[in-house]
Image (cartoon, rainbow, N blue to C red):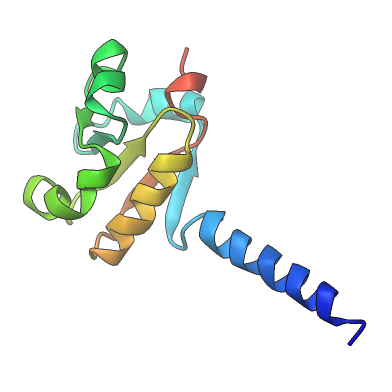
Length: 120
């Protein structure tokens, strides 16, 4: 029974890694790499922050679909044939959005790590 606390801690760590870790099959890029990606007009650029955050400051070309609306609006507003580039404030919400897009059948997904906070 001395091993039980270690087992619980280990399972918690695994759970957190799965929950918070990158989604399988999602490409991650930095904001520096994003500058090159923006030259490709065939990409769908999605900002998953709230409308207020988006209105206050956003990157030109990005469309606002808040994270809580991804499940409802992604299949209506996005093509599964084109790559989707997802950004948020820091990279956490966009990572969640990428996982949701994977569940919805999107296969070409890119997450911008660091988010708008890292954009200069």
